[in-house]
Amino acid sequence: MKIIQRNFQFIEPLLPLESIQSIIVHHTSREHMSAEECHEFHQKERGWSGIGYNYFIEKNGSIIEGRGQHVGAHAYGYNRTSIGICMTGDFDKEIPTTEQWSSLFWLSSFMLKLYHLQPDRVLGHRELEGVQKSCPGRLIEMDEVRKQLMEYMQ
Ligand SMILES: [Zn+2]
Image 1: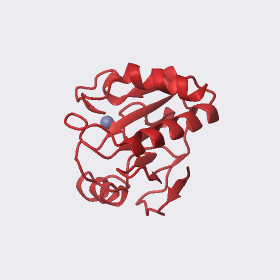
Image 2: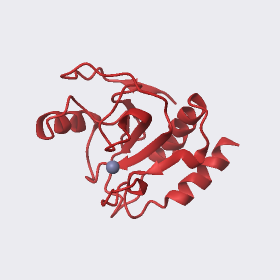
Image 3: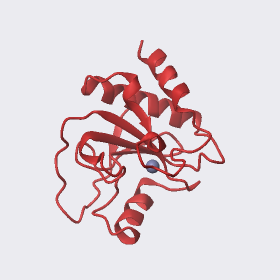
Image 4: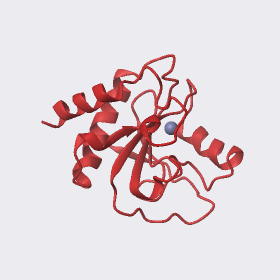
Protein backbone atom coordinates (compact mmCIF):
# COMPACT_ATOMS: atom_id res chain seq x y z
CA MET A 1 0.00 0.00 0.00
CA LYS A 2 1.04 3.58 -0.43
CA ILE A 3 0.21 7.08 0.62
CA ILE A 4 -0.93 9.29 -2.25
CA GLN A 5 0.15 12.94 -2.35
CA ARG A 6 -2.35 15.35 -3.86
CA ASN A 7 -0.38 18.53 -3.08
CA PHE A 8 -3.14 20.40 -1.35
CA GLN A 9 -2.50 24.13 -1.04
CA PHE A 10 -2.87 25.37 2.51
CA ILE A 11 -3.62 29.00 3.29
CA GLU A 12 -1.19 29.21 6.18
CA PRO A 13 2.12 27.40 6.63
CA LEU A 14 1.72 24.06 8.41
CA LEU A 15 3.41 23.47 11.75
CA PRO A 16 5.41 20.36 12.60
CA LEU A 17 3.82 17.82 14.95
CA GLU A 18 5.04 17.48 18.52
CA SER A 19 5.51 14.15 20.29
CA ILE A 20 2.75 11.89 19.04
CA GLN A 21 0.69 10.13 21.67
CA SER A 22 -2.30 8.84 19.77
CA ILE A 23 -3.96 8.11 16.48
CA ILE A 24 -7.50 9.42 16.26
CA VAL A 25 -10.02 7.85 13.91
CA HIS A 26 -12.81 9.89 12.28
CA HIS A 27 -15.52 9.54 9.67
CA THR A 28 -16.71 12.27 7.30
CA SER A 29 -20.30 11.62 8.44
CA ARG A 30 -21.20 12.02 4.77
CA GLU A 31 -21.59 8.97 2.63
CA HIS A 32 -19.62 10.39 -0.26
CA MET A 33 -16.67 12.74 0.06
CA SER A 34 -13.28 12.69 -1.63
CA ALA A 35 -10.15 14.11 -0.02
CA GLU A 36 -10.40 17.10 -2.42
CA GLU A 37 -13.98 17.77 -1.40
CA CYS A 38 -12.98 17.58 2.24
CA HIS A 39 -10.10 20.01 1.62
CA GLU A 40 -12.51 22.46 -0.03
CA PHE A 41 -15.11 22.00 2.66
CA HIS A 42 -12.65 22.65 5.48
CA GLN A 43 -11.14 25.63 3.66
CA LYS A 44 -14.27 27.34 2.35
CA GLU A 45 -16.95 26.38 4.86
CA ARG A 46 -14.97 25.88 8.04
CA GLY A 47 -12.49 28.66 7.27
CA TRP A 48 -9.48 26.49 8.07
CA SER A 49 -6.13 26.44 6.32
CA GLY A 50 -7.18 23.34 4.39
CA ILE A 51 -8.08 19.69 5.02
CA GLY A 52 -7.91 19.14 8.77
CA TYR A 53 -7.01 15.44 8.80
CA ASN A 54 -3.49 14.10 8.58
CA TYR A 55 -4.62 11.25 6.33
CA PHE A 56 -7.84 10.51 4.51
CA ILE A 57 -9.09 7.11 3.34
CA GLU A 58 -11.57 7.13 0.47
CA LYS A 59 -14.19 4.44 -0.19
CA ASN A 60 -11.92 2.54 -2.57
CA GLY A 61 -9.23 2.39 0.11
CA SER A 62 -6.96 5.08 -1.38
CA ILE A 63 -4.90 6.71 1.34
CA ILE A 64 -4.50 10.40 0.65
CA GLU A 65 -2.07 12.60 2.54
CA GLY A 66 -3.84 15.61 4.07
CA ARG A 67 -1.64 17.45 6.55
CA GLY A 68 0.70 14.45 6.76
CA GLN A 69 3.26 14.92 9.52
CA HIS A 70 2.04 18.41 10.37
CA VAL A 71 -0.38 19.69 12.98
CA GLY A 72 -3.94 18.98 11.87
CA ALA A 73 -7.36 20.38 12.74
CA HIS A 74 -9.45 17.37 13.68
CA ALA A 75 -9.62 16.94 17.46
CA TYR A 76 -9.74 19.97 19.71
CA GLY A 77 -6.87 19.91 22.22
CA TYR A 78 -5.17 16.92 20.56
CA ASN A 79 -4.06 18.27 17.22
CA ARG A 80 -0.40 18.82 18.11
CA THR A 81 0.10 15.39 19.57
CA SER A 82 -1.98 13.08 17.40
CA ILE A 83 -2.44 11.79 13.88
CA GLY A 84 -6.01 12.15 12.60
CA ILE A 85 -7.17 9.55 10.11
CA CYS A 86 -10.55 10.09 8.48
CA MET A 87 -12.50 7.56 6.44
CA THR A 88 -15.21 8.62 4.01
CA GLY A 89 -18.62 7.44 5.14
CA ASP A 90 -21.40 7.91 7.62
CA PHE A 91 -20.71 5.07 10.00
CA ASP A 92 -23.80 5.81 12.02
CA LYS A 93 -25.61 4.18 9.07
CA GLU A 94 -23.13 2.17 7.03
CA ILE A 95 -19.86 0.36 7.64
CA PRO A 96 -16.46 0.99 6.03
CA THR A 97 -15.62 -0.93 2.87
CA THR A 98 -13.23 -3.88 3.07
CA GLU A 99 -10.67 -1.70 1.29
CA GLN A 100 -11.06 1.05 3.89
CA TRP A 101 -10.52 -1.42 6.75
CA SER A 102 -7.36 -2.76 5.08
CA SER A 103 -6.03 0.75 4.56
CA LEU A 104 -6.90 1.80 8.11
CA PHE A 105 -5.04 -1.17 9.58
CA TRP A 106 -2.06 -0.71 7.31
CA LEU A 107 -1.78 3.03 7.97
CA SER A 108 -2.44 2.77 11.72
CA SER A 109 0.14 0.04 12.12
CA PHE A 110 2.64 2.10 10.09
CA MET A 111 2.06 5.15 12.30
CA LEU A 112 2.15 3.16 15.56
CA LYS A 113 5.53 1.70 14.59
CA LEU A 114 6.82 5.09 13.49
CA TYR A 115 5.95 6.64 16.85
CA HIS A 116 6.64 3.55 19.01
CA LEU A 117 3.07 3.31 20.23
CA GLN A 118 0.83 0.34 21.06
CA PRO A 119 -2.56 -0.37 19.42
CA ASP A 120 -4.32 0.87 22.56
CA ARG A 121 -3.31 4.38 21.46
CA VAL A 122 -5.71 4.23 18.52
CA LEU A 123 -8.79 6.12 19.67
CA GLY A 124 -12.13 6.99 18.19
CA HIS A 125 -12.83 10.73 18.16
CA ARG A 126 -15.79 10.22 20.51
CA GLU A 127 -13.52 8.63 23.11
CA LEU A 128 -11.76 11.94 23.73
CA GLU A 129 -12.81 14.01 26.68
CA GLY A 130 -15.62 16.43 26.02
CA VAL A 131 -16.60 15.06 22.60
CA GLN A 132 -20.35 14.74 22.13
CA LYS A 133 -20.57 13.43 18.57
CA SER A 134 -20.59 9.76 17.60
CA CYS A 135 -17.48 10.06 15.37
CA PRO A 136 -16.19 7.73 13.87
CA GLY A 137 -19.77 6.47 13.85
CA ARG A 138 -21.96 4.32 16.08
CA LEU A 139 -21.35 1.22 13.98
CA ILE A 140 -17.61 1.34 14.68
CA GLU A 141 -16.70 -0.56 17.81
CA MET A 142 -13.32 0.86 18.87
CA ASP A 143 -12.42 -2.01 21.22
CA GLU A 144 -12.89 -4.38 18.30
CA VAL A 145 -10.77 -2.15 16.04
CA ARG A 146 -7.92 -2.17 18.59
CA LYS A 147 -8.18 -5.93 19.05
CA GLN A 148 -8.06 -6.57 15.31
CA LEU A 149 -5.20 -4.13 14.93
CA MET A 150 -3.24 -5.97 17.59
CA GLU A 151 -3.73 -9.22 15.67
CA TYR A 152 -2.84 -7.50 12.39
CA MET A 153 0.43 -6.27 13.86
CA GLN A 154 1.55 -9.67 15.19
ZN1 LIG B 1 -14.22 13.18 14.21
